[in-house]
Length: 335
Image (cartoon, rainbow, N blue to C red; front, top):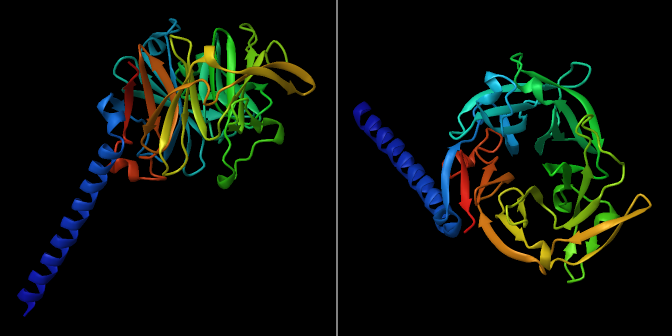
């Protein structure tokens, strides 16, 4: 009787495991089918860092070493994110070419307490590192990433006139973009909710500030220009052809990679705290590419015709990406 009961139990467990593995296989293959175009044109590059430690990936940046020390010369990518347990947010330093995780540093406030910000974006310029903060971009010293004490301390801030979810520096200018999704509790100010000349309803903005390479601060409190964007934007980059790339995502919904040809864009003026500054609309008029990608795409970078995409889906906060493509950084070929 006992042997019969044992056999039934073993068979039941085996059946449950078989069903579970079948469902996981269906999920895995379903992603490859749904996003077939993306995966056909993309290569897996390297592992997403920190996902087994409660780290939630957010910011992502290409790093070009400038010879600070041996540690710095190994670096090729930077990634930042917050921690599921609300401990200090982290910046990961990844090896050039391979993307292998070298080490991480914990982020600190100016008073030495833990910096626990969302850290949606990361970039650098001169001696300074920028991470998107509450109402601007927080400034850290770049050398602190490589001095060996495994911590980096906030030393200042650039106010950007929005609540930036991502940031990048190009030609000495800081691009800081906001995120809007009302259903998720992220609501832009009324002045950022714009109807474009093409009739599109844009709901977020990128403000652009010229930086002082010596101080790391903005040269003026007024941006040199503003871009009007759709909502749900998580990252941006400028390609070698001058087009603007945006990544958008929210939860389990499909992520998108949008490419905009600026030469086709409508322009206008934006009232920034009483000053009129040049405005460019990123909308359907200048949209030249829309690539559907797996959920939870975060910041992107562009390298030699490929867009590198890091997602947060595999972290311990969400987990499901462990059974799909979320454990890896993918590079989409833009040809």
